[in-house]
Image (tube, rainbow, N blue to C red; front, side, top):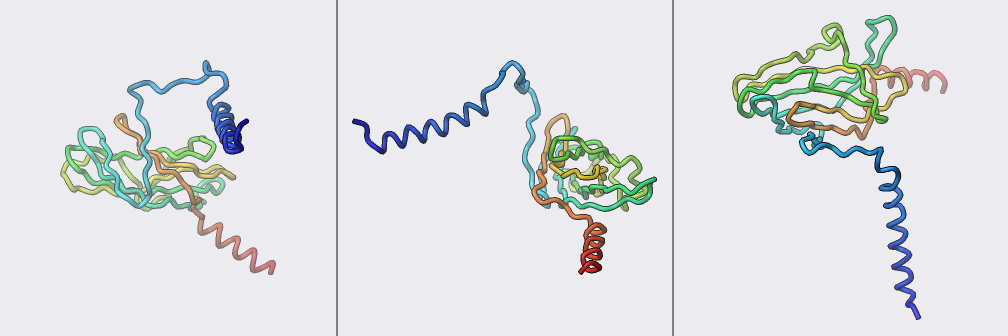
Length: 188
């Protein structure tokens, strides 16, 4: 006769295996493995420096928590995600370029980089070769956020590595928050 504990353990193992098999199941022919030389992303935290190999050197990269602002300069207002970044050379002669930054929605769609950052960003990041150890570069990179999109992550990508910042708390546009507060007080 089986013990009650043995039956419960078997049920627990089956309960664990079935979801795992379901997640791993399906048509394996549709899945592609990453090539052995693929660059796998590293996870990063905002407001903390991270060492990243770039070009002929290494950077200490610092990304502030993301912010949202409204750009009213075009034909219709756009919400812009802004990444304020800074970097200093750790060694060698690395470079920093706005093209290295990519922002994605939570569904994986890549946001379009702001085409004319000088008209909106106070200190747009420009491609800079950093030639002296300790030399610091700072600037902002902007991305257009389509209406209704949620921000998923910001990546800093080079041929050598990818540093991925996952967005847990959605940034709030101060203009939108002020407008909502005004609407709430007017209706109350």
